[in-house]
Image 1 (cartoon, rainbow, N blue to C red):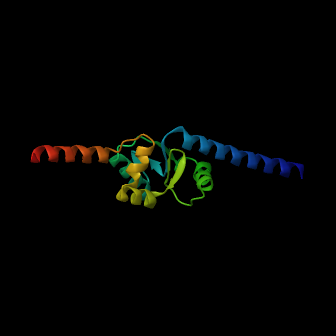
Image 2 (image 1 turned 180 degrees about the vertical axis):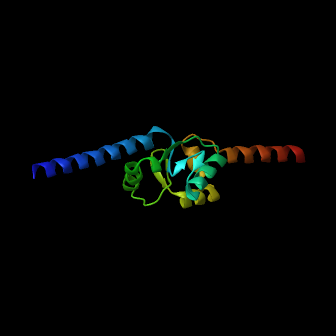
Image 3 (image 1 turned 90 degrees about the vertical axis):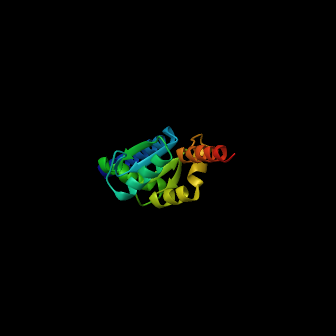
Length: 139
C-alpha cells in the first residue's frame, strides 16, 4: 500500500511538472505552436497549414514537436483542454488549432491579434505598401 501511494504521488508530481513546463513554454515567446513535426518538415497537413499561415504573416514563433515526446503530446491536450494538434498560443493564451487560425487569418483577426502584442503582419505591411504605390501612381 505504501508503494502504491508513493507511485501515485510521483505520477501526480510528474503531471504537475509537465503542466508547469508547458505553462513556461507558452509564456516564453509571443507565439508558440505545438505541432506534429517541425516548421521545416511538418508531419501532418494541419500542422503544415499553421506553418504556412504564420509564414505568410512573417511571424517568428517557437515550435514544439509533440511526436518526439508522448508526455508533451498528451500534456498539451490536457493543458489547453483541446483534443487535437496543432495548438497555437499567442501571448500565453490558447488560440486554437488549424481551423481557428485559418478563420482568424481569413477574417483579418489574426493580424489584429498579432498587432496587439507588437508583431506587425507581413501581409498588412505588403497591403500598406501596395496601396501607397497605387495612390502614388494615380496622382
